Structures are given as structure tokens and as C-alpha cells.
Length: 225
Image (cartoon, rainbow, N blue to C red; front, side):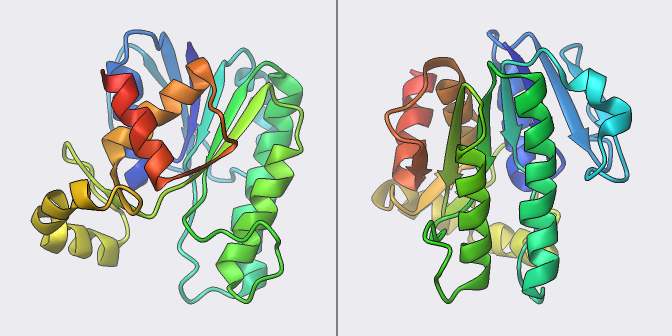
């Protein structure tokens, strides 16, 4: 399986990249982002672009992939809706439309979030924008598309968040989260399980197109068995 990964330097993307590189069924990973990952692996190739909204100079390199794992995103904290929509909806769809045209047999997996508003009419700004993004992605002519809606993601294996507040949160509460996680399968997952679940749906599909934390945990466990 050939994988295209967006957002490999973020917390989720780091975990997904790790699982892809460890998986013997993944032959190659192309990571696309604004900064290099700093990793070296014979499976890994990187495309570094300052402006991810314009991929026309590298569009020819985005062909021939079985799956795309889109882990790119920003926190909505302190952002106006227009700015958040530009980064979340506009950028994601600009990339996805190119990929759907270039890779009609691709499975596209998008990292959204628990509480996303599919109606696009709710009062919470980020949830509306994420809902609009999900709906637009599901309408594109991919072989399959899946929306991942994790709640709390516990970083494992040295993965760190680039957002200082989140990094402090996970560092301080990591031990407690590891203890309560088995009791809260609907709310807590890990970077490892997210990565394994993405690989599972890319290979075998899933019964749902929108996957909540509990679904992600189940798929992540099954793929590790």
C-alpha cells in the first residue's frame, strides 16, 4: 500500500507516520507538509511546501496512491470563523479535489473531531466548519472516504504536540489518562490506535463513514491482533 500523509509533524500525524513506517504492508509513505519531519526511513519521502493551498508545482507527484491520511489542522481557539474556515475547509478541499482527480481508487481519511456538526447549522463555530468539511469530502469521487472524530488522543512512543498548551496537558495528565483510558473507550484513544485504525480502513473499509472514538479504538485493536 502506498500512503500519502498530510500533517506528519503534528501530534496525530506523528503517530500515524510511525504506524505506517512500522507496517510491513505499507511499501511507501510520502509526507506532505510545511516543514520536514526530521525522520529518516527507506519507506519515507517528503514534499515540503510553504503554501499547501497551491500544490500545482508538485501535482504530478501526488498520483498513484492507495490512501491519504489527512491529519493537518489547527485549533480554533482565538480564530475568527473566516480564518478558521480558510485553513480548515478551503485548504482541505483544495488538496482533496486534486487527489480525487489524480487517484480515483484512493481511500481518503480525514481527522475531524468529536462534536463535529454535520448539519452545519449549530452554534459552535469550529463544529460547523468541520461539519461542512466532512460533508464536502464525503461528496468527492474517492473510492471511499472516512471521517475520524476522536475526542482525547493520548500521545505514545515519544509523540509530542506542537501546541504548547496541549503538550503541557498531556505531559501532566498522561499517567492519569493511561489509567482511566480503559474505562472511557468512547472518549480516550491513542496516537497508536488512530494510526492503526486508519490503516485498517484503508485496507478493509468500515461499516460507517463517520468513526467516533469507540470505533477508532475497536479498529485499532483489531488491526494489532
